[in-house]
Amino acid sequence: MSLDVNTIFQIAGIGIIVAMIQTVLKQMGKEDWAQWVTLIGFIVILYMAATLIDDLFEKIRQVFLNM
Image 1 (cartoon, helix red, strand yellow):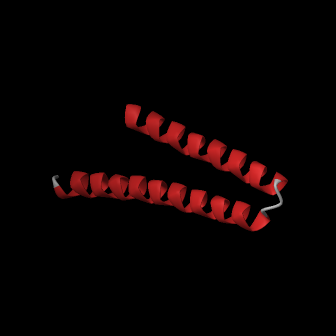
Image 2 (cartoon, one colour):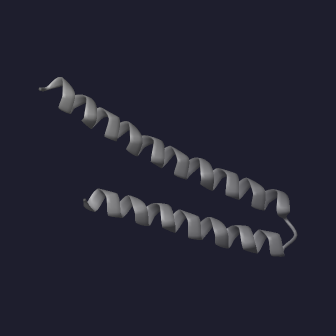
């Protein structure tokens, strides 16, 4: 249970940091860099979610193979 809560906080933290960096970069007139920061943040979060989904499928497979 604590792993899930920690992961949710990590995703939220990454989102907040990316939003802050994007806002600062847009205010400075660096829209292209802001776009890259957003894309990189999205890829990191997508990788974290894919890892969690992989773990879930692995646990489901173990449950059904050990019956």
